[in-house]
Length: 284
Image (cartoon, rainbow, N blue to C red; front, side, top):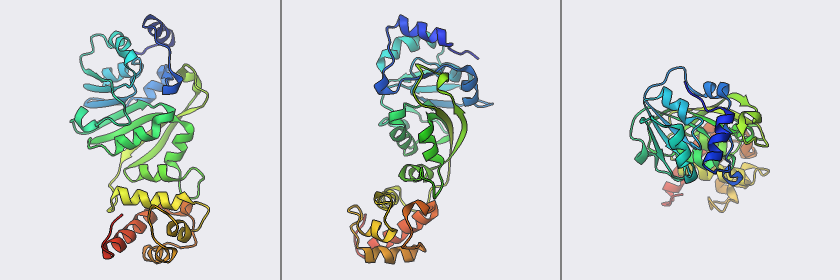
């Protein structure tokens, strides 16, 4: 399996007059041991990479998978990718924004594996766009800022638990596989990273949009009780009395706060609210 060494990467960037842009979160993974941990024991099939950059992860992915669809927002890397991926006709590069790309139009295969060293500032919308796509995916391994990784795997009662946690949990199970030193990247970032794995889960029997409206309303005033947070939310437009009634229907303590509710609590609360809206002849 081939890797791009730190010295090779610096040479590639210099030859193509590319200076990494901090605003795009361009910190490239250059540690071969970490890259080997990202790659699966067995490959084959199709991989989608988010944030190809100069190809430091794209190249080993091309050795493991039959097809690789690589997405990169910065077109300055086109000649660098041509050099690194020379002779690799199984890689297809798209210069698009991963926050808005229609993955179903790029990749139509089934059981796709996603990978990416995600830019810190755009990781959340990139993950949300991937999870809401129509692609049939089997697993995803993303390199994230450690702080974001903690939010993905947080449980009720944790300070990291919130809307991002629940929006991901609606569609996937997140696990931190490894913590990764900032010295494994070039240029070196200011923070530590973590490798996170996502596995698809069966989706709840409530729609995502109203589910997230309930979650945002509950966490919008997270120091208030659920009765008051939901009952005073401009997004839901219900009274505290109605909120208390719905919480009782869902089997949730009206005096509790959002951070102690489980995923299932939010599902039951969304179901109760949807039913109430239906009985009133309106919807979220």
